[in-house]
Length: 291
Image (cartoon, rainbow, N blue to C red; front, side, top):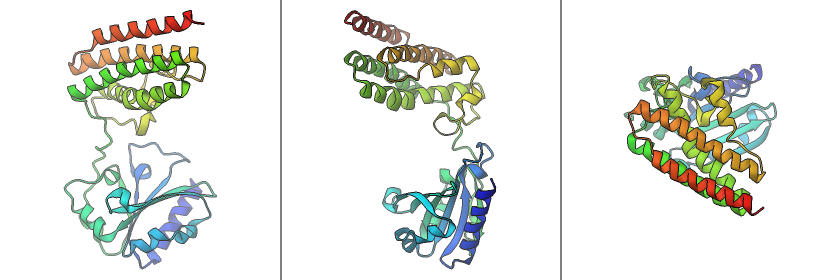
């Protein structure tokens, strides 16, 4: 993307000419061979300052690279006094995430036993005026690789997923669509379904694969028939449609859970599924009878 490349060069030139900047790194997807890159990919920039506070408290310097449309700031207290963030969307629609480091904290990170995940997924040194990065370890790209779950984790996800289906059923029976959506999207999909799908894909790729954040690459790695089953767990606001999606969830959890338990050598909670399904079916039947 030409506009993004031009903005990156602007930032590099600024960093080279700015006496307060010691180091500039490019991180994340643009330097990660395992990550998909397209015209929407952000610039993830890390800047090491002799005097970070001046740049943390003042945003005028971000206007050097264009006109900001929107900005989100996170101060150093969020990161245990290590760094601060300024995420900027410019009017040319290039998004730049600036991570601001104190020089002393950056040096500590360099000498830590393991690379922080931001660096382990890939980095490129663009500016280093004082050779601070000479001892920076090479990225392994392993921190984003999907790990095989321990039996305790697998059991917890399976148990909690079936458990939370009962909350969805109660919400639908009460016509509480907001709470139902919270449970299906915030809890079940994020906390249980995403890990299950990750494990399923990784188990078919010798546990040496990443699907990127929050299932971005699921569709790429799943058979079309299974992807259609996953799509059926999404629903709108209609209560009947949400009941259908809930049972689609149940069918999908059974399919994934059974195959994973066989591959991992773990026990699948068949009796739990039987009892929860009975509960769900009876609650739905009562709702249908009351209409």
